[in-house]
Image 1 (spheres, rainbow, N blue to C red):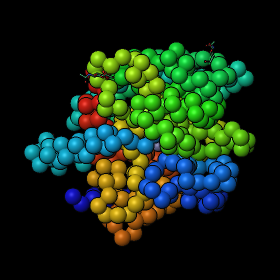
Image 2: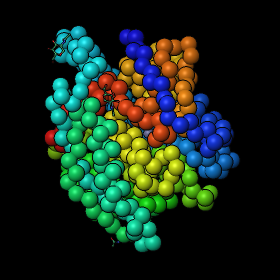
Image 3: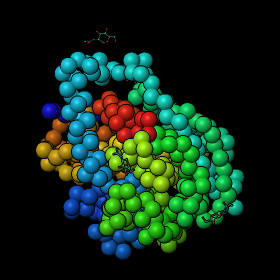
Length: 363
Ligand SMILES: *[C@@H]1O[C@H](CO)[C@@H](O)[C@H](O)[C@H]1NC(C)=O
Ligand SMILES: *[C@@H]1O[C@H](CO)[C@@H](O)[C@H](O)[C@H]1NC(C)=O
Ligand SMILES: *[C@@H]1O[C@H](CO)[C@@H](O)[C@H](O)[C@H]1NC(C)=O
Ligand SMILES: *[C@@H]1O[C@H](CO)[C@@H](O)[C@H](O)[C@H]1NC(C)=O
Ligand SMILES: [Zn+2]
């Protein structure tokens, strides 16, 4: 299966000035191909990285072997359809017009500290929702905003006692998207967060950086800000599962990444679009972090193989020069800054749709 070459020339402003640091690169290229981990980095790396604004290490957990198997299975199904004509050559032009619409009931939960009550404005909420809607339009995934609630709780705003927060605020079933916009999202309680976030996946041994989409812009090294993280679909959840099995399902987003937020280059709402991509089952375009030609990567055939996450918004990048295709730096599932983000590929759109029907619809 050869990879379709796909590269978009990026004309966006290249913001090299804030991305001059390179110390963090090694922390993301861990030797054991574990994306999203900083388990092999020493404390020094962590300390230095905190001063570099960048998408950094993603908070979403490493995919379980079950989810990877599902990706493999779905990719074969999609190709069988392609051969059978169900996804014909028109697929590359698939638009909202030609695909049945998927409707995702969605709740926004804004969680603020008592002194940041006015940080998230109604305009930011509306703009974030519009950007989310737009980004998934080509996949014909439509979000129904069921409601927006606001909570003031200093503990929850920094994601302390997140189990209590989610048990209190989460709405709907496993097919309902719940997004928590927290003003002070941080890893305040890594051990607790680990067991709460990963309990269904059993990845406790890797709990640290891998579970947080971390782009640190904090001025305080002791309380790094995270950009966000989401739960991936859990293939074990079925229509009879109880809320106790999935109360933690959803997305945690640092509120200042919303459009109009305070984090330069990361305040167009791209973090939410990226994270919701994980909620729909997508992995990073650099998943596996290797140029090995036979690697599974992100299990998506039309994203070129990529061995490193992208920092900022470079004019172009090719981390696997011996393989076809440039890095998909404009893809929502890379780590590029919001300036770069533009689209999902057709195959990613198809995968999100098949993940929806197998993992979340009707559950
Ligand atoms: C492309 O789609 C159009 C409209 O859905 C259809 O009529 C046409 O046959 C398709 N083309 C191919 C090559 O399948
Ligand atoms: C704030 O969070 C704490 C910790 O979970 C909880 O005990 C408390 O009830 C919450 N306060 C409100 C008003 O929800
Ligand atoms: C459904 O999932 C629950 C756990 O979420 C599990 O206990 C139960 O056995 C599952 N049922 C089926 C039919 O797989
Ligand atoms: C949607 O598809 C159009 C046409 O291919 C493309 O120009 C646009 O960038 C896509 N938008 C997104 C958000 O994927
Ligand atoms: Zn991510």
